[in-house]
Length: 263
Image 1: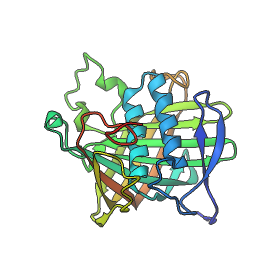
Image 2: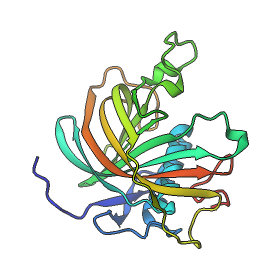
Image 3: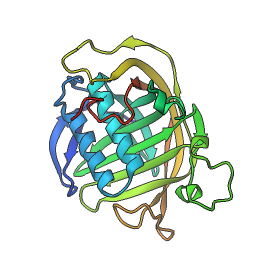
């Protein structure tokens, strides 16, 4: 695969799905801790889009991504084969744990890989979330009430989603495969910007080893969580690579994308 060094952009979403407000990618360093950071704002808007579609889980993932950017993570690149085509994404991992005693029953260190790229007028974003270093990707229907598969508890597997926004927007859900998101410890202190640091959140920069081989199925509509059984699937593969990451420790029960204090 021949990679050409170039300036990549991420586009802020309007809830109507229009692309606007291009933002420099990590090839041009971001002021990651700024409260009005455009990349964090883009993740906020993605979160709003998912929450409006009643997808609370994905909405939280994007809110944590915005929190990670504001805490100081700087994304790195990730090489992916998407339906047989080589693509280069910007990516990072955010791992979240809670110090609050009321959240003690939550599984420790939820971690998510978030990656994005722009291709012409299309913005592509995918998420891989799990609680363990490696896990099979669960079909969304296996988590429904009445499922007889005892291996499909939420903590037993990974969940994946892929989005394309622009002309002909679409959404896809992971229905099989396997993924790995494991810390390769390289601890570093988050940028000491006290004025911008999210309230109630402590963080540590680190690195994560990631790999994935995931099958995605298209949903019936852009905002649906129903898999279209008649639509073709796509395979997304990334060989083992190391990407930037951040570990967040949150002291409040339900953090916002700006921390525990408010938006």
